[in-house]
Image (cartoon, rainbow, N blue to C red):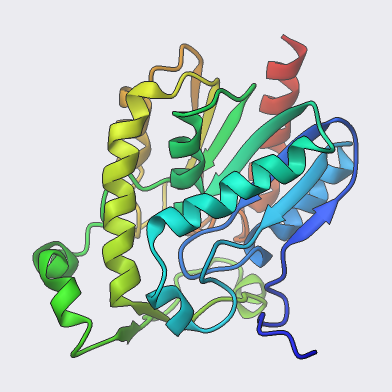
Length: 256
């Protein structure tokens, strides 16, 4: 039987101890962008599950037909799957994956939570801000638009990337609805939280992380900034620093 999943976009499971790390990727991307992080955490002893968000890793038309609650269902399924192998689960997400994990954390408490390059709202793209309300109509004229020139420090990492080459407008509108849900959810998030962001992220500015930190109810919120990376800090040049910061945080929280 022929698979409809793009080569390299498959979800992954790495067995380890009774602490599970649930990895969720970003918008239009695939589990590939958190796979190396998953291997690193598994080498620290943790069980790791990298989920594939609904509508991702196949054809961009599938993403165009999806809703943000479908993406949320993917991470919720991941939690339930991981709970059969683990006693504790630590959700770790990049960008949209982090938004989804935070929304989920408003409904259930986790021992720890890691959110990387997390949007609080729409990216600061002037045209997007203006056109967002009419995207449900505009999608019939322009179903998707091509991505621009990549902004990566590690060229080899960019070449290895498995993703869609365009943004479906219908899905961009759903992204905005996801951001609205995130803002409503943040005051209900009480899990210890590590927020990671690149100071050189020109897509989702670091101020998004500051707004998330200011709005969560968690009594333990730690913010760490890295440099020499674009928005995709789990894959770009500073990724080893991101991996180490994540592992140190999880170890400290679980030890406490």
